Picture (tube, one colour):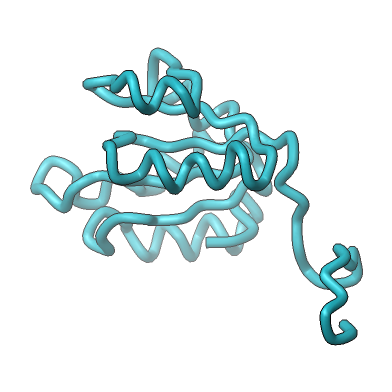
Length: 131
């Protein structure tokens, strides 16, 4: 890559995100700014799930009715939940099995939410290509 040349080079391991479905679980006010980056900055179609949907988030994303629906539709999956006992290892083998093959997973929250061995299995199987 040449200095100041910001064109997309398909030979570099990357993925264009424009027009892909990005997902946020538990979209709190603090993560709305992050999801605006996906929506407006990268051109993604952003969907989300939250037990308590916010009007601010509705300006950025479309809510869906279940986590399973989100996982099945999304090319990029991000989580934004607090580290509580109920969410410990919420990202596990079952979670990955519901995701699209070759999707991207990003934990924007705490490490305790993710079963690391499940992430490794998902990467090895190709269920997720980046995590």
